Image 1 (cartoon, helix red, strand yellow):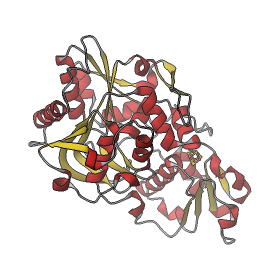
Image 2 (image 1 turned 90 degrees about the vertical axis):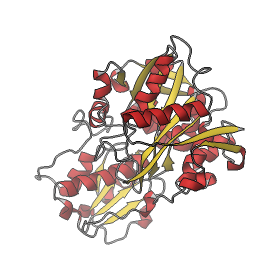
Image 3 (image 1 turned 120 degrees about the vertical axis):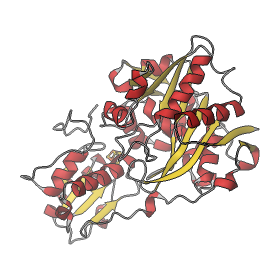
Image 4 (image 1 turned 60 degrees about the vertical axis):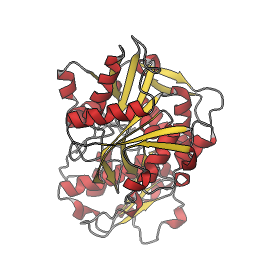
Amino acid sequence: MSTVSLVKVKQDDEKGIAEAVRRAVDIVGGLDDIVKTGDLVLINPNLVAVPSGRVTGAISRWEVCKAIADLVLEKGGRPVIAESSAAGVDTEKVIEAGEYTRLREQGYEVIDLKTTPRTKIAVPEGHKVFSELGSWELVRKADVIISVPVMKTHDQTEVTLSMKNLKGLIDDPTKKAFHRDGLLEGVVDLMTALKPELTVFDATVCQEGMGPIFGTPVPMGLILASRDYVAADAVGGKIMGYDPKDVMITVRAAARGIGEMDLDKIEVRGDVSIADVERRFKRASETVIEGVPPFKLMLDEGACTGCRNTVISAIMDLKSQGLEGCLEGKYVIAGPLDEKLIPPCAEKDKTILVGICAKHLEGRGTYVQGCPPNNIFIVRAIVGEGQKIERRYATEEGADDQSGETK
Ligand code: SF4
């Protein structure tokens, strides 16, 4: 039977979180048979993009990673906290925003994977989408991988937990390929390639609504751990009010025999039960973007997180600069939308087509190239030439490269 630990954080500070992480890991067997002396242990937090605040449920807290690193050090391992942020986002800026620099000052290794040597990782037989994945030498060399997601909702996959968090261990072109060729099975392919040993959730402060970045913080005061990623995601999702069968990555991973999603076959041990802490999280799809003038957002169901988030991010950029008035009467379209669905009143100079999936509509409006495009190009297309605009969090490099392949 798979085991998931659920531990209350009695005190929301470094000491209290460290104590909770230790107990959560101990309950699922500790590190004795996972970490050997000299092992390179890759600890992968969620550092997807610069959050609105350090503890807002958008990124994993350094306190959780430090606690895990200390457990690894006790076993004689070499802990390395490593991540690559979303495509087009400078990981180093997220490291700074998350104050992981404090760990560096204390001698811990915190690494922006995007600055390290790349390699390919083979996916074993039975893969559904990818036979190999673009990644980094450090990931390939790791003896042990520990995913440290923050518990939150996500605009395309409902939730993003231990398995999807591992996307931080593939390079930007591969991240984009996931969205183009198959995100759900791609994540399961990634699981089979990496075979991660343990997951520890930062569920101290979670996030609901427009995840992965723009949601609302939800204090939960929990740490969850498991050696079974599918079981961990089933339990984490259930705490957020999702039946495991409603989370497609969980379903597909269980279907490939990677772990257990049947809650009746998962033992939950620790301070609380699922029922004690279950709370329905607001879904990303229930988010209303307020304070913008009337405009039409047409996200085809085939539009992946890349364009969905980029469009939302671009709208947030407009709002933060007081330029949201430029949206009035515009049509913003992403994904492989059927041309017949575009209303005749959508004039060419008021229509913005986002990403290569909308290229077939190029003659119907201003086409913004990329997969996904950099949000600054969407903002530019909305406001028109001649307006001074700024960028909120994406990297400056490649800003004028319409390929969208910023590093
Ligand atoms: S163009 Fe946008 S919707 Fe299409 S695959 Fe790329 S990121 Fe996803």
